[in-house]
Length: 141
Image 1 (spheres, rainbow, N blue to C red):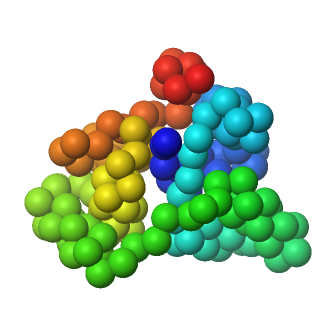
Image 2: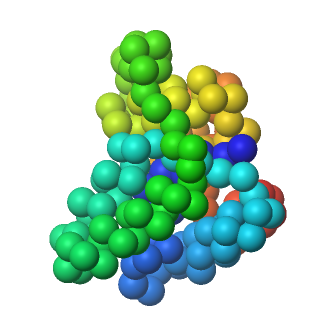
């Protein structure tokens, strides 16, 4: 099972970008059952926030709902995950607070990898980071 960061969802829905097609291939593979994936409630929330800034609310909500359904069951960040996220945040130099908690949730769930365009995930010990490029996604399919 892999964990998706917001960047994958945003690039899949976004305008022309080098990561758009690889992200779309990954989402297609997930929808076909070829790849098992999830994310967190917070990632869906962040996606909704970004998407609603670029589109009307109704389509943004529909997209967020579709991702939540596709990636269910979603990971939750309990007290232990938050504590581990805080440790990661303190011990890494580039990982932001949001991503530190996401990484901690992925580790707690025993995820095979986290897929994100944010290279800071590469600093997380014990968590494989996959950049959603053509070669990165090909390695998951």
